[in-house]
Length: 228
Image 1 (tube, helix red, strand yellow):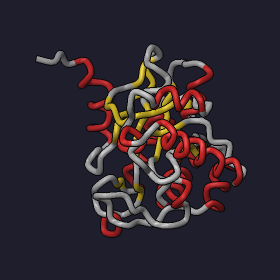
Image 2 (cartoon, helix red, strand yellow):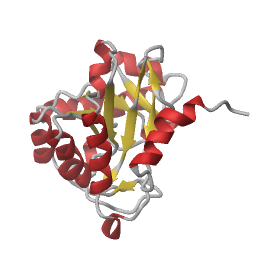
Image 3 (cartoon, rainbow, N blue to C red):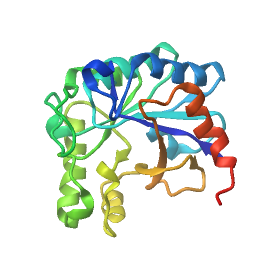
Image 4 (cartoon, rainbow, N blue to C red):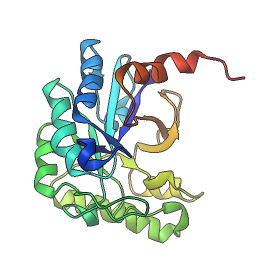
């Protein structure tokens, strides 16, 4: 059984947010509308810990950008759906500061609580957006558990986890289990299957140029083409 877990980052006009890791609101709307019209059930990533069912789709937004919370999640709400936004708890309400990324505003706690009130999941993306694979198990635990404590302090249930940069080490899985994480998404590019490791689920990342026909090709046609 396959469930597309779609990966987005910023949501906004390209004139302001550029094209890298961004999707314009109208294009996102076309993606959401397609799955809604097909009768798909929109699920949060944490819901995948409870079993898999056909015709499900999960929309995820990494890093907690303001546009994703103020434009992306409401788009899902308008179509009766829910999604997951992954936040870096030490930087909530500030700006993105990780290497290779221009500084863009990140959503604040009030906006995140409002999103959770509409049924969306506010997930764990560590305290500082650290590359876990470069840290000791103790520091990994601080990043993961510390972010979980911050979410709980703000009244947010959280549930699933997203690896920053997809970075992990041999110890990461054990740390995730110690911290009570049941589902974790990565940057490995594939459509998730019910046979996949729940602590290493792949996603399909959506780019600026992914108009609906191209997204559908990537989801449903390209996987059928044999690799040479």
